[in-house]
Amino acid sequence: MSASIDIKDKSLILAIETSCDETSVAVVKDGCEVLSSVIASQIETHKAFGGVVPEVASRKHVEVITLSIEEAVQQAGVDLQDLSAVAVTQGPGLVGALLVGVVAAKSLAFALDKPLIGTHHIAGHIYANRIVGPLEYPCMALVVSGGHTELVHLEEEGRFQLIGRTRDDAVGEAYDKVARALGFPYPGGPHVDKLALGAEETVDLPRSWLAPDSYDFSFSGLKSAVLNAVNQHKMKGQEVPVAAIAKGFQDSVTEVLVEKAVRAVKEYSSKQLLLCGGVAANQGLRQRLTSRCEEEGIPLTIPPHVYCTDNAAMIGAAAHLKWKHGLTSELDLKADPQLKLEEW
Image 1 (cartoon, rainbow, N blue to C red):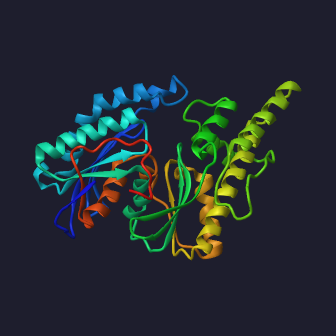
Image 2 (tube, rainbow, N blue to C red):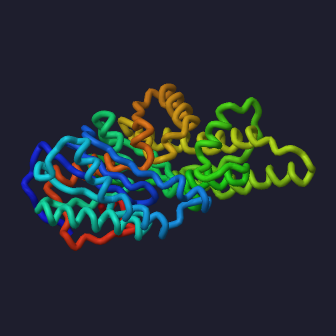
Image 3 (cartoon, rainbow, N blue to C red):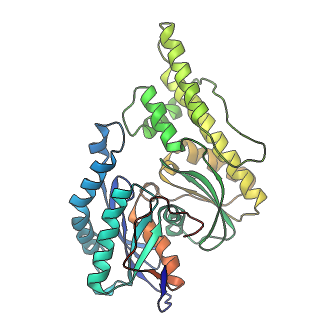
C-alpha cells in the first residue's frame, strides 16, 4: 500500500481536492503554512438541480483542474521541481469526482518524479485546524458537513478512533432538506442559519439524544418534525412562521452536537476540541460551542471559514502527516469512495 521515503522535517506539498463539487488546489509548506489556495466552486451550477449531480460535478472538475493547478503554483511562487510530494483526496466522496483529482495527481507526480500521497477527506477536515495552530493530544474532533456528522477521538497524531456517527442524515443534509421545506434554494444551510440568528420567537422541536451513553446522531426525526410544523400551518391556512421554525431547528441541532461533543471531551480526557467540516461555518453552532467550551474550560479550535468547506489546503495539512512518517502511495492508487478513516 505504501512505500518508504526519507523522513524530512520540512515539506512543500501540492494538494488536490475533488471529492464533491469544489475543485481545489493548494500548496502547503510544513503542513501548516498555506502558500496558495485555489477553489473553483460549482454551487451556481448545481443550484438548478437543488443539490449536487455527480456526473455534472465530474465534468466540471475536468474543465478546471489543469488551470487550477497552474494558478495554485503561480500564486505560491514556487517551482514544480521544488515540491516534496503531490497529495490528493483518495476518498471518501463521489467516485467520479474523486477520479478526476486522483488521475491529475498521479499524472503530475509521475511527470515530476515526485512522491504521491493519497489522503483521507475527513483527515483533511480535522487537520485544517493545524493551519490555525498546533494540536494537543489527545484531542476530540466534531466533524460536521453535508455528508458526515462524526465524533473522532485522536489519541495521538494521525491516529483516529470514530466514537460516534450519524445514523441517517448528516447535519448538512438535514439543513438543506429543512431549507427546501422552508422555501430556500440549495445550498440551504446558510439561509437557515441567518434566519435562526435573527428570529425573535421559536417553535420548540424535539432533541434526539438516542441512548444515554451514545455518541451517535440522528436528524431524520427532527427533519420530519419540521415538515409537520410547516404542513400544520398550511392546512390551517396560516402563514408559516419560517424564522421561528428555523430557530427551533437550529437550536435542536446545535444543542445535541455541542452537548455530545463536550461529554466526549470529558470522558476521553481530551485536551482540545476541534470543530471541522463545512457546517463548522455555521454561526449558530460556532457561537454555542464557543460559549459552552468557555463555561467548561475546554480549549476550542475552529478553522477560518475558507478552510471549513472543502479545500485542498486541508488535504496538504493532512498529507504532511504521512510525509513525516515516510509514507507515500503507489502510482496504481485508486479512488475509494468508502475509504475508512481508522484504516487510513
